[in-house]
Length: 439
Image 1 (cartoon, rainbow, N blue to C red):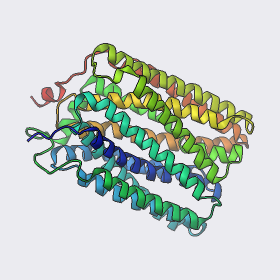
Image 2: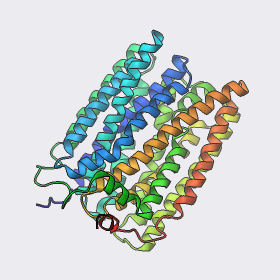
Image 3: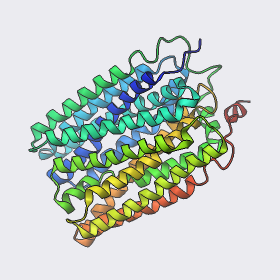
Image 4: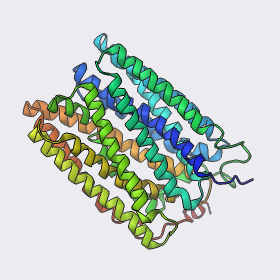
């Protein structure tokens, strides 16, 4: 029995799950990173290594997506993943507060916490996107992807702003209370969003005999457009993630921002992302019902333009590192977020299109493949960016050149991503790849 496609209310409810995931991830990768580096005087490589580890755990995303494809329900994966993610966020906060004691114990607890975060994000996020691609009508997929991602960014912005205000004045006890509130609120929000949307387990998610995981993965990798898109995801996310772990320490070390101020700066960045997504979703005519090659070219232009805009904003951040206090940091960070939002929402629209191109039953493994590419990029990018700052600070005995070098390197990577994106949709997408591989 074929279930009816989701209406806009159902799509918006799934967006609440994205908001919940973003809120807890912001806590672990942004706020706790700042506290470790500034308040507890740890090397930036420590939180970067932990975040890289949680991304390494997510390399199993394709396997989770494949299991979700051949199963009968995706909702338990989402709820179970969110529970694991929320508990991991609280445990990571507790481990951070343990840094004033035994470093070995604190690190052991941190490894466990970030492993839980990686498992939770991978299980919940991959299954959520697969459910969205499976139950959304083809003509609504790009707009639905945009809506849910906008809601995720909105969740991050609201959480960053509220948490930043509640952390003033900063204290370890206040940090733990804020973390518990964020985790509990995110889990409850996800449950409200997903329960009842999928419906009863009337039939398997996929149709026909399910291929083995390795066969399905090789078939998808054989699609030249899907493969090129995977490479684009990796390069663009590598560029984005190199600044993800150093922006708040940069604001604290170079501009004297307090923990609350730097957390709110992260909210400013994500507000820019939100605006970029909204404007492209409304004005980017490539997201309409027209699926012609011309529409594909318009979508590609938004991706390329967003990557170039991100490169220019990062060049401005490099100048901010050199200039220091007095530079308009918040407008610059907002501009970076805006450009990121432009390319991200266009790329998400392309992702949703590609996920459903081969028919029902393999949205999960495709989303898992691109999620794994993003996880590798984020893990490497965050660690490389933070480590480069540590090395640069020691080599130059000052902060400015270290941050300047990393921002310039990121700008270069975004230009490479723009070149790769320019080649997308130059050939028809092979909708028969999987069937050919199984023949």
